[in-house]
Length: 253
Picture: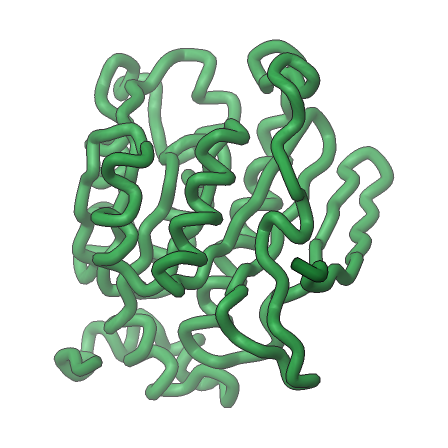
């Protein structure tokens, strides 16, 4: 993929990235060329969009058909009180424009479903799932696997959260096929077993922790820095300030 070179203003804007050997000018150029789709402009999507915009991702797509409500503002930090009643995709796009005018924002004011998932995903290099329901998570994972598009997926609940990176069509350094989302979570729980955040509550700052980690994984994937969370589930317990990582593999099919 080709893109315009970084101009002097961009070089100054991203100077702290460019001096990192793991990113450098080539990595920043890759960030500028990248196209990332974010599912949801809510609790997880807000920090994802904020930090990817600041990092210089060239094109950010936002899938969200919801409007901003007062109860969102405790955690969805890209929206303001004055945005109540506005489409979240519009509010998020305006916020991104204030952070970084070099980022192109594509608004998809729809709810992700089986009729549009493949069309939407096929326009992007990486998809970040910041949704809040199991139906969307499984649809995103299955669609990304089918189209061979990298998925960074995260989830939160009350005081804990988790995230992982999925590239199930590839093989790891050991030659084994990478696991899929269904290798980690074979099937969604029955309806009503896991309460929503509206029912159980959630700490706003928790979504910032997990969403920022999702953004970090995207930056690593685009620039080639470090080791992404492929085949590993990172879990965070806010009450004990503890991170744990478990490995998971592909199951026999």
